[in-house]
Image (tube, rainbow, N blue to C red; front, side, top):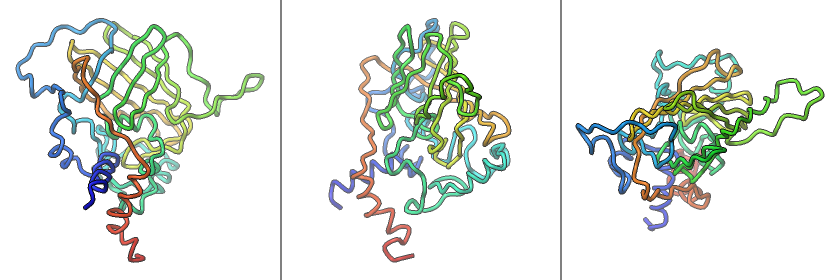
Length: 294
């Protein structure tokens, strides 16, 4: 196989996360990273106050952030305890989605997932799909999140501003609500010296929540919590609140992150349309019988 197509296959595998097991075998660790299994028996120093700054990596290893079958805390595996509290609209929308993972999966050539075509995966999918290395930059006005996967970034404002009003709230005598965004609008604050909480809304409902095709609407509200447990660790929790799609809020992921060296070099992981096209032609379409007319 030409080297270029091999590269394309590897990239698309990373984008759609074809196999958690394969990723764990082929990429045992990010080059230069340190994980909890490297530091057995350690006693980390106390956490600094009101500080998220640094390079963070899933503490259990690279596969710890890969959530191929959907949000890690509620995977799409058919188990009753992982059944989401869908509204009728939410269930109908979920059934209309054709993901390549989870209980409703289809061959990749038949998916209607917007992301393999290199459309923005948006937030919170960037966290509920393939969370790799991330860098957090803290300023007096905001917290900036830089993600390795597809080299994306977002801003959480900490200057006291409020979230914009949702599209369904009355605007009589007020400016029209802002346009929806792939990454939404985010504001955050410290609730104590070691816990930072962010709220986000204003999302474009063309994105999916995760790899398993869980839907969201234009009134999606995402709650993030980052809690420093010691100098080297932070717990990240993501909660989904969308009354159009779900009857109650639900916790999507709770992940332990580990602080890395400030000089850590974050790898490049881009979605390239030209390589997606080659991958589909060489692998996805034949696997789904597209070339044979099936």
